[in-house]
Length: 188
Image 1 (cartoon, rainbow, N blue to C red):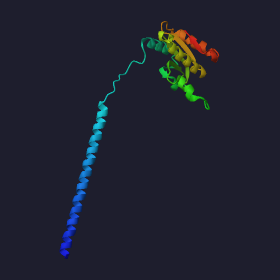
Image 2 (cartoon, rainbow, N blue to C red):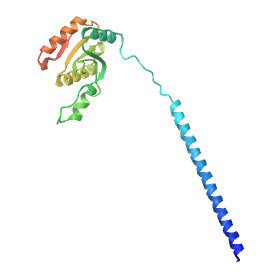
Image 3 (tube, rainbow, N blue to C red):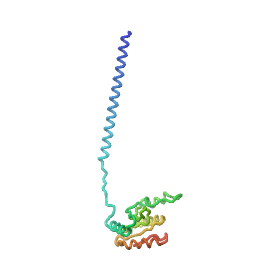
Image 4 (cartoon, rainbow, N blue to C red):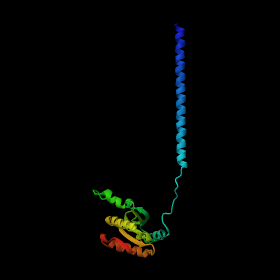
C-alpha cells in the first residue's frame, strides 16, 4: 500500500473513532438525562403521596383547664404538657438492667411537668379520669408512679371530675416537697 492509501486508511480510522466517541457521549448524555428525569418523578411522587394524618389538639377541655390553673398557680415555673417519660427520666451512671427497667416506663407519658426556669423538673401532675379505673391503666399508673418516685419527682394526682384550684395545687406542691421521698404521691 502506498503512502496515500495509508493516509486515507488512517483518516478513516480517526473518523470512525471520532464517530464512536461522539455516539458514546450522546448515549451517556441520554442516559444521564433519563436518570435525572426518573429520579425527579420519584421525588415528585413522594411529595404528592400525602400520609392520611392531621394535627390534633394536644389537650382535651379538662386538660386545658388544668393546664391554665397550673400556669396561674406557678407563674415562676414552666409548665409542659404531654411529656414522654423517656425524655423526662435518665438512668444513673453504671445502672444495671437499663433495657428491662426502661421498657417498663419508656412508652408512658406525663400529663403535665412543672419545671424550674432552668427546665429542671420539680413535679408531675396527672389528670385521672374514669379510664384510670381499668386494670391496664392502673398498671401503667403504678409503673409511672414508681418511675417518678425512683427519680425523686413529686407526683400530684388530680381527679378530672373535681379539678383542683390554683391555691390547692400550690398547697399540694408545698406539702409534697416537705414529705419524705417514699411519700411523693399526693392525690386531690
